[in-house]
Image 1 (cartoon, rainbow, N blue to C red):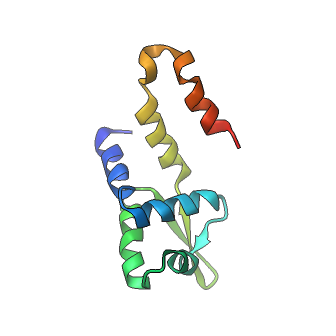
Image 2: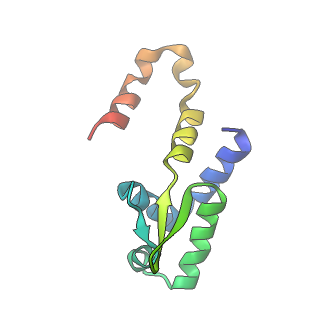
Image 3: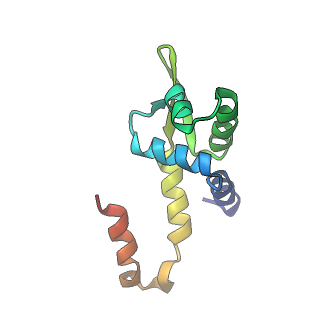
Length: 109
């Protein structure tokens, strides 16, 4: 991941509504959620939520697919993985034992 891509992803996640929606989608992988379910959970109008969804999609964090009559939103786990790797790549000056708690947190539960 390049710095500009990381900045776009972090900027997209810097709003409470978008962060909540993305975390909700991550919890529902690999099936995703219907847009209507995300809108209902957000408490926003469809048009307002769509603006937030567009920001996440532009940053490559969310993809959309048509399933029957529903538009299904899915978190891009690849983008999340690339972002996390970008942030932790040079972790602890090459001392892997210092990063073990981070890895344990990511693999737990």
